[in-house]
Length: 378
Image (tube, rainbow, N blue to C red; front, side):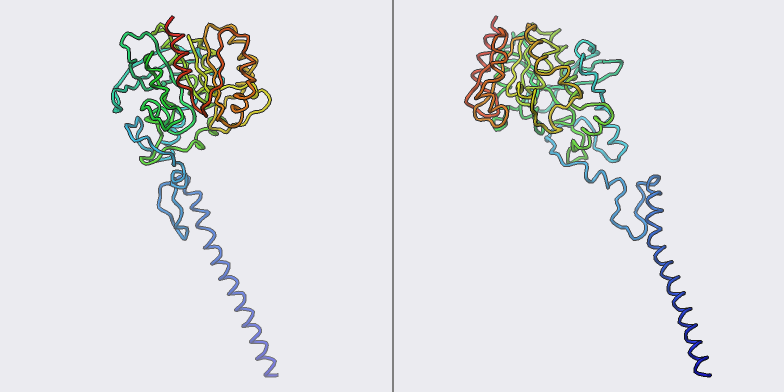
């Protein structure tokens, strides 16, 4: 009898112990889970507060800002102050918002508001800017500027840079290791030189003091909100071109690769005296196209300015065109240099010159020089 009571007492004690341990474990588990949940909500309001609890690796806004920048700064004067918060980053990106639909008729729709030159610390280079209004919104486009070798020049050449970091500075500095090579020097023999500067490039970089903002924080955001980075910078170039057309006797647009395509899209609206499109157009894009988000992306651009529409506009345009393709290239432009699909496409147009050259993905200086001489000597 005594043994039974003792055994029963032990069972009761054992059960109570299990209940107490289970309750303690639940309390401990709850204390581990709860603070991060509370902190996650609190961070929306106090995002700059120091981390609380066990999650010491949380960095507040740094969770975004620490991964937003990795591009190389060009090393000179920067127009914008460094970014210290998400709000500042958002405001800078918002300055690049332009509805993609603005591009279609931009040249006719925009109005020049003001323009100016200012000095910048790259030799005798100046920064040119034009502020314009389109659909009741103000924007400003920028370019490097250098006088022509001849002080009597009444011609302007606008170079639109291709893909790559800080290309405008490399172009204006005559960086021969760059694929634009000495395009600026060739143009400057004949014309006052303007080299367009894209948003988030060169002195227009959005930065944290050490590195430039990634385009993954720009391209998708603008597209998903109805804008387009490509549309924005192309409309900037159209505004600059409109100023040049009203100021100079003759205007030439020039570009290689993405810059060549941009120059072509510009000229289809602006109709300058001449356009030099190096590896920037192919009839093959009508059936196949390979490109990333770092290339020109404008919704419906092929509907408005596709291959057939391009030919139609060029046929009716006063602009003289030079298209070039390199036999040392790869991919679509290699095919163009060998099969001459685009050259044959334009073959019966009197205002188009089409040439395959022996170089790679660059511009042929002798061919470009000869073309400029024939256009600008008249």
